[in-house]
Image 1 (cartoon, rainbow, N blue to C red):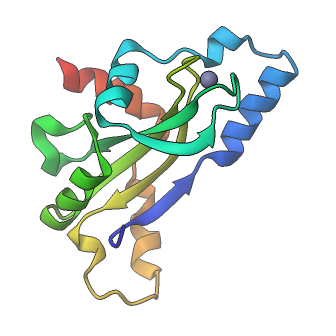
Image 2: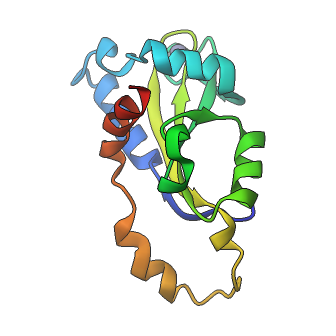
Length: 154
Ligand SMILES: [Zn+2]
């Protein structure tokens, strides 16, 4: 997506989780614990991928995009399709997207990446990156996402 910026890739963390599972340091039910909310979001707003589930290898993973940001008001913490994200990215100045992969078969789930979208990413378009670095410290840590999601559901 054109306004995508400040991408944080969680594939290393995912690989570590899979390694722990293979080494039996964590139990399968500890990582295959998708909540009913997440499974519903995957069913209704998820984007199918071509990637096989690394755990059960019988289903393809689904990506769920959760959105956060002050401009979203009551929509913050909800899941959106990629098409809806494109529209929001042209409407709002800035919002955060968290991408979670979910297996509909065994309930494996893991954070894939997070990034910012919104019209602010169109401004200038110059590749100096200095301003980006100055604001990167203000993005929410991934760990706060589930808490904020619960708050949004009240
Ligand atoms: Zn699976």
